Image 1 (tube, rainbow, N blue to C red):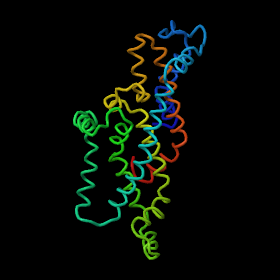
Image 2 (cartoon, rainbow, N blue to C red; image 1 turned 120 degrees about the vertical axis):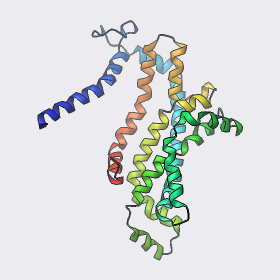
Image 3 (cartoon, helix red, strand yellow; image 1 turned 90 degrees about the vertical axis):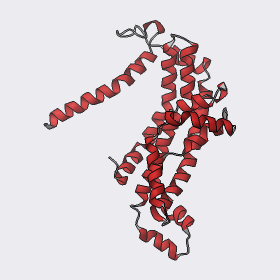
Image 4 (spheres, rainbow, N blue to C red; image 1 turned 60 degrees about the horizontal axis):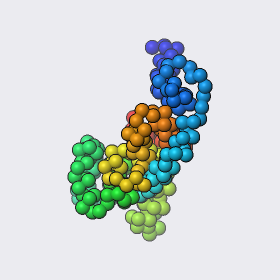
Length: 265
């Protein structure tokens, strides 16, 4: 395929990818009675966005999502980094088996374990609490796998030098490994934040209290509350997408660098 054809194919793929987003933005700015008309809107209006920002508790939904997403991201980065370092550097019986079991959990999706997870959360009194939203979302095998692959590329000589200075395993991890792994940690932070911001199934299952609704659950409730008022649903979707776009723009370089460094394609 020539360079011109490949460029044309690239432009077409980009246009197909961006088209739904453009349609969404244009639809939000349309009057309600013209929402599903293919023609150019007679006028542009901010009424849909203003209604969502003033009449719908979208701020509360976004605050809940921000609290859960940030808490899960911070705790998961610390725990996953420690686990990945142990699996990459420490020598202990069953290390490879433990790593294989962790990776195998990637094959188990949330709907498969939803019922037992709900029963455990109810037994522990975690339903309708922030803890119930945060704790089940912390563990993810992909984070441990990605960090372990990255840690295997760090020269052992650096840790051996730290060992000669009297550093134990914890100080080697904290003072040598963590500073060197900032790019991969930054990329994982973006992935964890986006995944938890867009989480829907578990927040819907674990909460009944309206004040604890996360943003995706809150948007879903608009469909039932306002029936056919899709203009408000689309406007809420645009507002909820703003933090995710900011997080992705800020971390996209780190994300690509980390994937290239870890050898993932």
